[in-house]
Image (cartoon, rainbow, N blue to C red; front, top):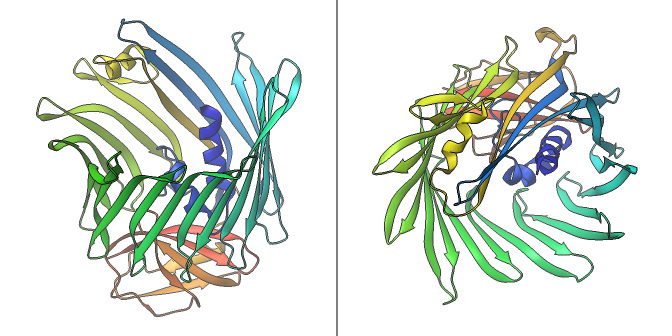
Length: 435
């Protein structure tokens, strides 16, 4: 599991262009996967230290806890692209031992072309998997090939992922297919209304599985409805989510409900931000005995440069908050377990390297920030366009010719994440607030 999560981190770090949107569904909840905490462009990630607490408990009361400490070291090419990531795990002798390594290759347009992972075992370094990527002329990711080696079987499993887009560059079809059988086992179809995602239909081996529809108010996502497909060939309500915003348009609360003859509350995520929109806490509650009960929280520690350097999990146990570094508190998750369950807590510490860039030499700047009626965009390098995304990850605006006095008076207020695409296919990211 930890290798999958680490690979999700890698994808977010190295994939350029709209291909990041394709993978946003798979990214777990941590500061490095949250769009809110985009690293300061003056810095690049040097090391990530991962603390993993895995807990399993059955109805018999037996609880098994595992602690794994892992670190990842990043090696960069001269152009700033990631070249190699080396993974290490702490062994019983408290020594760091190599566990995995990732190699990245890029095409002539600086887009990720392949990623290969090797794992260390008693026989030395062994090939584990490789991903190969293809893009269209608009830099959309359109094809991905996954080759996985099955240990002990001298066999490879190959999967292919196909992505299709509409004329506006929005993802409309996603297919996962087994190459050896040419069988589609997952497919998603996306529909839009005025550029806003209106539905997502999931099929499993050709059969309808789930349908999620989205409702907006003033251009902001206000609610979503999840329906499942039953044996009677009809859709039934399964879950729904509601989104609340503060006066700046930033999401502050996500409440989920499930259908059990009637709609009942399930869980709630409350987010806390700094004034500049940087996420500093995720707070989670569950609905028990007709009231909200604290479950867990994650504090994101931000340095003076706006970089998230730590994600510190804690759980609510015996009317008190207990750090995830103390295993005593973890059993609070499973006091009412009906079967064997497991969970993982991931404290993360990130170390950055300063690149020696000052604000006056940043490649792109957008001002004023916050802005109300017009903005100015200045770039020290040729920029083909700048894309603006809302907090749900949807691209909502694109400026093809960045310049001064751009009218944004009709944009909804709130926090936006922008991505500037340069003529040499590199990207620069940042945050901006509309008053």
